[in-house]
Image (cartoon, rainbow, N blue to C red; front, side, top):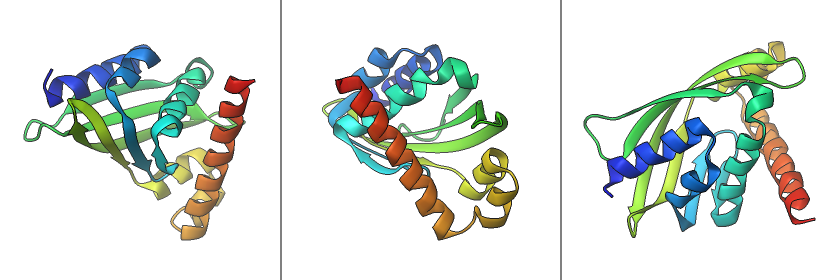
Length: 156
């Protein structure tokens, strides 16, 4: 399977909620990074996708993706979902870059406008503070805590 096919397989599986197929595209030494989680490695990166998929129905997550026509290691995707206790609608446009090792994704970097995301997800506080490093650190602390709790529940 070539790189484009692997990326397409990853997002097709994600769209279908097929965690096993998604993770089959990842190298065991995967390094994932995005503005909300920061950097996650190996098991934690894989657990993040499991956590997000476990919330899929509740959040109404849908996604659309397209592969970059000029590159074998880039894609764009749009995630639409309801976030938080107020169920605020979020439409997040994401650019993804990939690196490969042994025909699997070893590095996956998602980029998106965190300020735009915080405005949608958090409302006024996101608008006022979403651009700040303080808010980015607070979001990453919150996502890591949620991931830690999710992992702990999986192992008990």
